[in-house]
Amino acid sequence: MTKLIAITGITGVQFRQGSSVADTFLQTPGYTIRGVTRNPESAAAKAWAAKGVEIVQGDFDDVKSLEKAFQGANVIFGVTDFWNIFGDPRSKELKKPDQELVAYCYEVELRHGRNLADAAASTSSTLERYIFSSMADATKSSGGKYTKLYHMDSKAQAATYAQSLPALKDKFSQIQAPIYFQVATEWGLPIAPKKQPDGTYRMKGPGPGHKPIPFGNVRTDLGPCVKALVEQAPPNTNLFAIGDYVTWTDYLRIFCETQGLKYGGFDELSYEEMIEILPGGLGHEFAQNALFAFEFGYEGTEPGIVGPGKYGIRMTSFREYCEKTDFSALLKD
Ligand SMILES: NC(=O)c1ccc[n+]([C@@H]2O[C@H](COP(=O)([O-])OP(=O)(O)OC[C@H]3O[C@@H](n4cnc5c(N)ncnc54)[C@H](OP(=O)(O)O)[C@@H]3O)[C@@H](O)[C@H]2O)c1
Image (tube, rainbow, N blue to C red; front, side):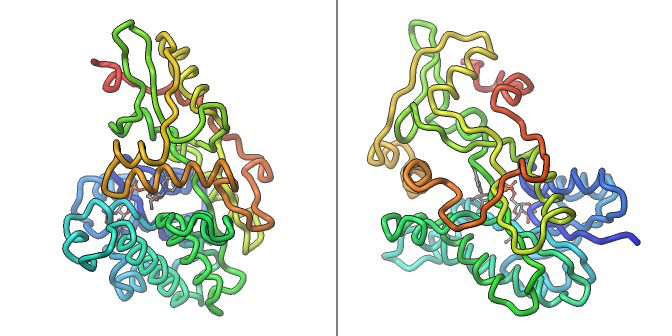
């Protein structure tokens, strides 16, 4: 019998988490795919429709639209988008006057995560597995040291909410995405490797250059991890989709080696310096995320978190990612 998987976050500009899941299930016999978007008329939505994905309208802010979008689904993949809320000009108007923008985004993303869980619960008669893309509960895992890691706690608390719903009992699992390899190479952030007057490439980033950071090629590797959660893992699994632990210095060294460039060195930035180069909350979230990961482990301290190796999934290394990626836009100046 064919199963129906409903996938949110399928239409991202750079086609990341939801797209990875859709690619995987398009290649998995026995599944039909329903993609959920706010705008079924977008170019991205139409591109999926052309591949045979049923596209339906659904908004994380409108639980009724999600209930309709999830109707009859056997599997649901839910991913909320903190940075879409952060980048929405309306958020600055809607937040309380004295509220930090990232604190407002936390509230909205948590609401979105709860709405997704409620909508998943409404289709429990057909639902076998609801997979939610979460992150560590930084407040809890750090014993109260990191209480303002908003883009992590919002997802963690939405996962806790989903776990509390009787209709999702033994139907819920979560996946944690690592830091995307692309963070310093493809998003135009000021931490990107930069050519120096002497021709070498230097980069900067939060925290020390010699400590391993969990990265991954989410675009290609998240889908197989979600598939393992659906087909191999028992419910209530928390899978950390780690691809490759890489230090900042090795990140730059591997980047330079694979692109035929001269390595110039890494500059460690403090939390304060990160806020200065990435103002408005972005530097705060990014720097604290790295500092929390160095100290407590990116995936948090909840017991029983498993990795892709448990299910025999081959993850992309940073070297492989660099060898396959066209960095001409970054290297043009
Ligand atoms: N960058 C990292 O290193 C990293 C690491 C771990 C976790 N994350 C998390 O990953 C999340 C983003 O996932 P991604 O990279 O896969 O995003 P993405 O590729 O940019 O896609 C965002 C998706 O979210 C959908 N969306 C946004 N708001 C929506 C709403 N109100 N209702 C329905 N759909 C909505 C968009 O659909 P439409 O616009 O078509 O509606 C789009 O498909 C963020 O929350 C971030 O914190 C990032």
